[in-house]
Image: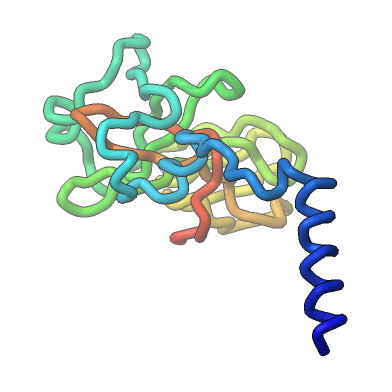
Length: 169
């Protein structure tokens, strides 16, 4: 029994010397931490992602922007470099949902504009249709519109180019 205890101890020490980086704690990436856990105490003053801009490319102040919003009507904003527009999801109140829609059709990747007359996103390429939450109403699109995370903090709307951990739709 003593032989196993000594052998195991020597093996653990040798493994620790052979791979010392595994034993050291890694610095925390605040972008990942605060995007995943915005209520974490280290994230109190941290602003993740990029600031949302209105269509004139002016930074949006939540206190003046929120009263102008209509629930259930997606609101286009700019900010993410990969897409021209991202659509904020507006809930009752009005309030800004913790996620936004990227208007990229899941069928072939066409840009899907919001059609206010029909109250839905309609793909100009093959006719896929999505509701105001980005859920598929009519194919050939196989999945809902992709999401990005939205953080409302310090009178700013921040867009984080990462899908929420759980699809809230």
